[in-house]
Length: 259
Image 1: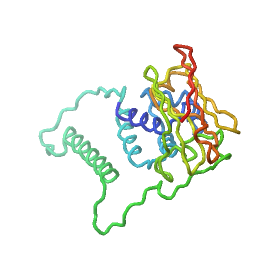
Image 2: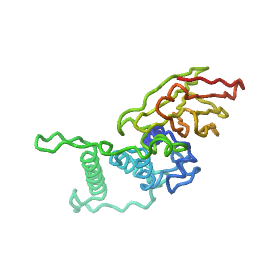
Image 3: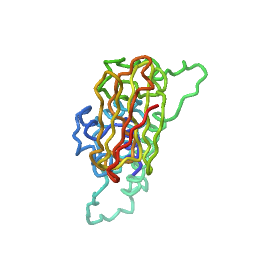
């Protein structure tokens, strides 16, 4: 289902677990599981909330939601069976029921097409002022000690469009799992980002003088996407002392590395 795929892409952008996503919105973990897997159509407010958390404009996804709502409203609908009435021979062709139904349907489809075209078609009028990205005026929400324990994306530190992209200091690859040490200078903080992870995997990031931060892959909904640990503050000159550790559920082994 195209709409569910679009929602999953948004969720991937947030790098949030379902539990963390539920904590940031008015919708439960189980509700998000149904929405993201196409089991249930989310309300429009849920789509707007997910766009807000992901930091993207809601226009495109709301338009896709409107299309999905039309499709869902037709599920299970059974046409009412009625005895056909004889059509009087003197009735004008344009007033006959099947003609009027076809015309009404065509008008509705055209109207929806126009709405979606206006919503999704990019403008290229020469006199239009240049569009400014919603991210361009955003700033990171923490620095140094303030960042310890906070989520990278929610704070702007993990967002490539907020005051520059974070830097990958080093990557560890083991059995299809990638573990990255990520760092953003303007935040003065580092974290671990992983992909290819499995349920039960554990990750840790630490730096001198701060409490280490941990992340556990709790269920299957935290696999198949990027996941980032909470951050640790990194003092100037301590970048080489950042340490990341990974404990893989399959092998039971623990491996640590530094930049």
